[in-house]
Length: 175
Image (tube, rainbow, N blue to C red):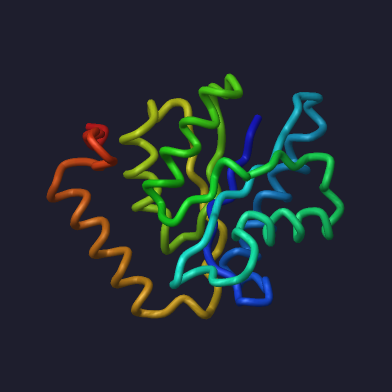
């Protein structure tokens, strides 16, 4: 099983946002819950660079991977080098490519409650909904109105256009 931790933000020195920290905590909790089943479980972080979420010297996934290692789960990590995304749609497209290359048929995506509805819309449009479960970590206290408004606007845009556009492809919202 693969558990993808969607990127959020970090400071220029690599300090992760509370949202990123809560996503990591949930991913590790799920990892530990599934580990006794004797099926391999891997954590994979997404995230590259972006003015609004990471203007450090390293891609966001590196900071997440470092935190997972610090928490004692280095052996469960797979590199997110090919998942250096800048937004949710790019997350889904890059994860799709990763899944094809690595024969991953079913997986989990970790986000936060404030981002759950949009993530589900995007991932269900790009993947067969039976192959992906999008789950939410608790929202940190710092989530403010601007992020909630951003989510509402992004969801409205997806719904009004009836799906997800990526380059020359259109992925309709799953009925």
